[in-house]
Image 1 (cartoon, rainbow, N blue to C red):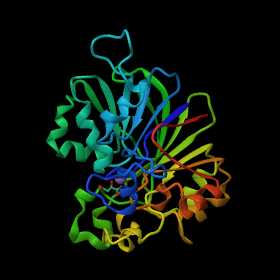
Image 2: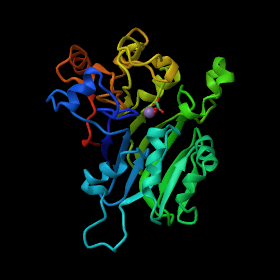
Image 3: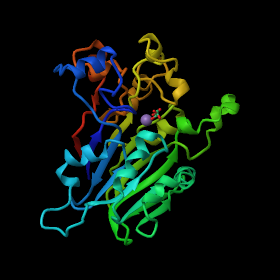
Image 4: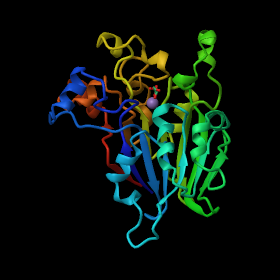
Amino acid sequence: MRLKIIGSAAGGGFPQWNCNYRLSRGAWNGGTNFRPRTQSSLAASVNNVDWVLFNASPDIRQQIAATPELQPPENGPFRATPIRAVVLTNADVDHIAGLLSLREREPFALYATGRVLEVLEGNSIFNVLDRSIVDRRELKIGAQTDILDATGKSTGIAVDTFTVPGKVALFLEDQTKAAEGFGTQDGDTIGLRLSSKGDVRSAFYIPGCARIDTALKSKLERADCLLFDGTLYTDDEMITAGIGTKTGARMGHISISGEDGSLAALMDLGISNRIYVHINNTNPILDAASAEHAVVVAAGWKIAFDGMEVRF
Ligand code: MLT
Ligand code: MN
């Protein structure tokens, strides 16, 4: 399987349009330590012909422009795409807004949990994707789903769907239910195990995760590759940076560092290929010269950049 991380930043991207914090500033200034990154998305293929997108970011047009594999095949029909399906891991803006750019009556299949499909259903703007052309299909939690194209032909990729601790999308938070996760329910945030038929190897894609519990840990033990939530380095970094009031815990994102952080929690699992994705523009690992970048790399992690490829 080929995995291409086409967008490695969290919501807002890097640099973020309105951000003057030192990291975005470094990127605006073209500093060599501050590689720009688009918003969170992954492309996968087992045959180099049929591609599946995992999440559709607001930067999708730019991501397709930067990724020849995702462009209409040369000598193909006047309207064509190698993107056979889009699979969503939650209903966050950075993961669904790109669907709006995939209009123009092109057939593909759209997969998400019942909860996320409800969000699309409830926002009529997503009707720009005509349902007779773009079939919406439910991902059942705890089940394996073969990802098929619009005609029902297999892409060769299967996903195992499981819930991870997380939070309902920001724009759906119910303030009257603050004590109960702002109305978060199962299916609002999922993790995926990607595999292909007849191959025991697998990659896990978990761009949003609030906590690493024992259930998640034991699942990940068998991973050949892990693409994991690298939103924040420190839980309170947006507050200490002076640019926000929320902790990572409040946003549904575990931090990298600290006793309960992902670095410590996933240290002993023996996953050879561990990659941080969905990196927020406050995370110091975005500065390639930072101590935090060095700590993460020394612990055996890679820091995703746009265009990073993994083959397994
Ligand atoms: C998140 O990952 O927490 C969200 O994408 C934040 C947002 O909606 O901006
Ligand atoms: Mn996000």
